[in-house]
Image (cartoon, rainbow, N blue to C red; front, side):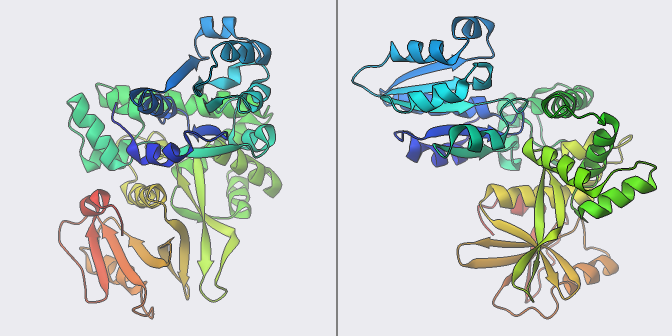
Length: 393
């Protein structure tokens, strides 16, 4: 497995902190691997570590509850700080009490948990501000390409546009096996993590909304527009129910939303937003045959890259013309338009005209899959390949 320094560099300043370090993210994105890499960091520096994987039945049998876990860790404490790594901690009865107690000892606590029982809002309620969380995502392209090289397998940008960056998906020997793995992962999150976790009664309605949202990534929605679409499909669902179901999908990190930004109001508009898949494979596994939605997947990938690189992102309304992303980091503001290609005249005019009337104080960027450079005196064109290899805009 590759070393994911991007995340380790964020966690490292908190190694000595008494805050509980929560490593969170969608299933199978590599949380446990990052935890072990943090432990390797500390052990290589001569620090004392304890790793417990509660997915293992013998570990669960030995330490079934908070009292047993606290006693076990306490017996290993000494004058030197102990770094305690608890993987799949939700399998411990009273895990929250154990974590809150252990952080008061001479210990530094790190945890991961399965989305079925330890969703992000549980951290807020159960750990009461005594934690710091780190959001982990599936591989961005550079990570996926590095891991594929490590595996000795080819991995083109076109592969990433379809199959995304779940680490174990890259390990599969054939495209058929990769798709099957991803479908099983999707079913685990939808049917087990969410339907069981929230005791969803109208499973067919929830599943249809999930399918609709995940196959319609990089499009502007409101809860009402989704309810109206479902009504047109013969499915009756209220706007509050749509809002609730979208919340579940966000809790499990299946989707994220990007608000619209109005330059006139100089504020975000919260009633409309674009929804993006956490990984483009969640779109691809819902397509029939091999006609994959490369256009919207490309935009989704750009959004994921911007989020990974720490930009605050919104959709920009340029007097009725939509610009895909307003990306902000520190004092720098960028406007980013994304298209699969602008080689044809109509596409070129449509995408570049979106920047009309915007002054030169903001850097304007267009990202496409074209190999030809279409940069102008006012708009910088990045080929997708170039953008995915850059560290910043």
